[in-house]
Image (cartoon, rainbow, N blue to C red):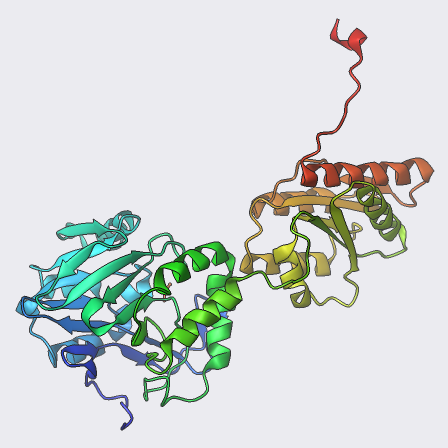
Length: 423
Ligand code: FEO
């Protein structure tokens, strides 16, 4: 197999099925936060049937010329009956407005959630939305001897995302799913350099927060006959494509093992300048341990590494964060850990904050605000203690731990009603 090269020729995946994407070898970061050490590719595809031609996704706007040259080498614009949009992020929809101008007769197929995005995307061009059909799992388009079947795979990684399966060729056009930022003009996974790191890195930063949706998508994909996976970035997976599906299942499956499913886990992270916040953390842990069915772990963040806790955070049911207040703020390792939570799904977990302080004590409220911003539940007011906790205050810490544990286990706290207060 000769290298594809950086020339503007389409690449045949099967008779009448071509890659018409673009390489971006010099990109060094994507969406600001992702490192792309060897660039990326924007993969788009053309499928020819007896009754029409489909274009599946486009490319980033700045690469439109290359895309159109490759497209023109395998199809005329007046042959295009179908445009499939698996995902409307601009790296895949950048050339769409121009494609619609060149092939105005084409009908667009996209997910239900993508409709509003399509209108927003075309707004700056001043053009009306094209004829389009919202589709979901098992909807099909007949191209004449070739059938496109859609799979509803939302949140991989946007609400609009879907996959498209070419039934007769057993090819899956998967959008960002199974993709990676890896630019290699040899294109196919059995020809390019070692891209395993890029594949795992991409999953960890793009797909990991949506692992329940990943498992739903994998369940749709696993029963398919699969000869090739054609993602929207990185190598086309023609060698052992099913291995990549298996890997997604592994990556999306809970990583910690030997956990009792009936147990709830509470993880307490803290930092302590003089031992006061540590004493609070220990007493919160003692209090929580009094409640059956809760497994409590205590971690000192001194040393500052947060990445090592990602798996732990992802699996935990409850997270408590203890920080002293220094210069009217929580301390940096706490913020580092909290900022790393954007790569995992923490929505709905129980959250809490506590800490000792000297003068103003803002850390606890700031942490609580951040937890709420990440959509954790914060049902119990955080605990601030001035300087050294005394016995009564340590008892308050135990009570806080008990209360968190009860919220985790669903045991409502028993409250004594003072009948006189109701009068
Ligand atoms: Fe490759 Fe989510 O765009």
